Image 1: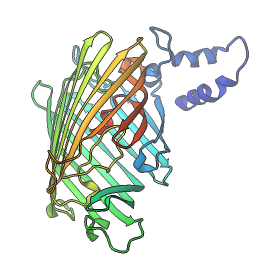
Image 2: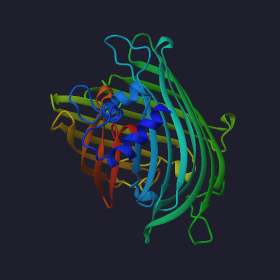
Image 3: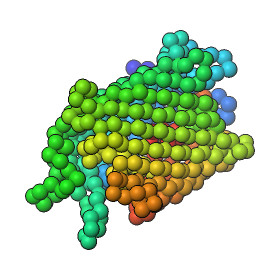
Image 4: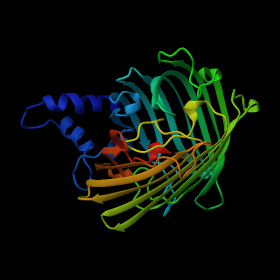
Length: 384
C-alpha cells in the first residue's frame, strides 16, 4: 500500500497542487524521486527504500506487429542481499508485462532474474501467453519477395539455472523451454506455401539445453566496460516432449570499452545455427534495430554491430549505432546472401544512478524499413 500511495500522489495529485508552500508529505514524496547527490530526477531510492518499481510504458514500434502498440511493464529491482566487497553482484529483477499492438496482437507475461551468491547460482524463470499476428517473408523465382500473414496462439514457459565455476566469472548450467503453438494462416490462397508444413500449425515444442555465460561487465543494465559472452545449445526431440526434431546453437559476444571518461564504445557479435527441421517461425532471424522481426530468416545468421555512447552530462547521453548481418540457407551461401544493414541514433537519461540504468529512445533505419524504440538499459539486452 505504501508504494501504491506514493505512485498515486506522484503521478496524479502533485501536478494538481498549486499552493506555493508544499506540505511535508508532498516534500517527502518529491524527495523520494530525487538523487541524493545531484538532486535530479532519479528512481533509485524509490526502488531500494520503498520496494518500488519503474513503470515502463513502452510504445511498440516493431513493423512486424503493426508499427504501433503499447506495453506496460512494471520492473522491480532490488540489490542482492549478499554483496561481496570489491565484486559486482547483479541486482534481483522481477518484471511483468501486458501489451496490445496496432495489428490486434496482445499478450502478457512475467519474469524473474536473480542470483544466489552463497550457492554460486544464477537463475531466470518466466512464462507468458500471446495472441500474435505477424507477417513472414519469402523470396520466390520470378515473383520475388512475398508476404504471408499468420495468427499465433502461443503459451510459453522457460527456466535457466547457472552455477559459478570456482571463483571465476564463468557460469555453466542448463535451460528448458516449452512452447504450445496454434497457428492460423491469414492469407487468401487455399494451399499452404512450401515452407509451411501442416504440423507447424498445431504443435508442442519442448527443448532442453546447456548454457555458458562469461560476464565481466561492470553493470548488467547499461555497461561502461567489460566483456560478456554467452552460448547455448538446445535440443528438441521426441524424448524431450517435442513434436519436432532439431537443434540450435547460439553464441553472442558483447565488448564494452571506455575510451574516455565520457565515451563508451560497444561491439556486438552474434551467430545462430540451426540443425534439422524446425517450424518456419523458429528459424533464426536477423535481430537488428530497424529490421522487422522474421523478415530475414535462414538456417544460419551472422551479425556484427557497434554502438558509440557519449555522456554529454552525468545524466544525459547521445549515441549512434551501425550494424550488418547475413542470413544463409541450404540453398544460399554466405557470399550469395543479401547484406542486411542498420544505422541510427538515440539518447539516454540516467534514471537510476545506483543501478546504472539509462533509458531513452532510438531511431533506426535498415535496407527497406524504419523503426523507433523505447530503450530500458542496453538495447542489446532484449536481443539476447
